[in-house]
Image 1 (tube, rainbow, N blue to C red):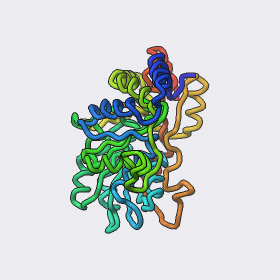
Image 2: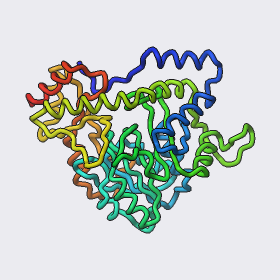
Image 3: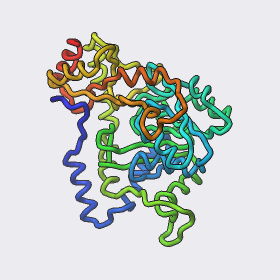
Image 4: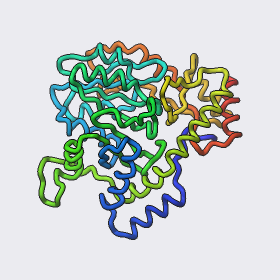
Length: 354
């Protein structure tokens, strides 16, 4: 079976982890500081704050911005639940806006229509590794005095008109979960151009203190370990190569697949193909079974829009037709860097038999 995702853990990652374990300096030490400095070069030199997950990165960003009740935050419903979970966790209300049917990212028109007097922020998701329409969304945000917090958890190294994602919002958040374009076993990163916000984020991740026992604010324990940072540094060194391989694999699939529409790439967008997502106009489960019978793995991200999940279901009715249609039709195929030419041919042949 060709897996839909394949985490890379090689000898270099193992050696890095062992080196840190032998050092005895294992929590938020020199490896974390070095990882933050090196990651900063991928986001136009922004201040970077490492934490224990992408979800924590999003939650702390909202907390540092002072977002809470009765604020509203505009998010897509076509995303992983964490995008909306963090809004609830800080006591604010997620307001769901529809997506662009081609990019699967927030529709600027839908965002503009969703703004109310209680709206304080927009959280665009660079879904599947394709950049959201950041220029339009930033213009909307500036016109209404809203913060923009990028959910870049699936888009390490993606660009928009030459500018890296993660360098558009007042804060941007990355995940280092094992199946991402790069990982750190687990972890997250917050990037911001604001040094004061960065300091607040560092306090929040470490019990509200910068110096031991000198607590300044109420904080939490959301630190990254040095083992994770050491693995992340190895992975970061391979990110450009890995993304190039993903893009080459996507180009090959684009050329070979003829039975379904291949992923759209907007003008000026540097798609990094965290997922290679097509649409199935028909019985998607039958299509998945067909692919599995030919030893081609697939996955559905995301079958249930967030607004229909139990924690978010309520009396309010959301008009999100493109979100609903995408959730019913999308299917992600293998595109990861470990694929061989013969595997890419097998994937395309299986898809063309649909």
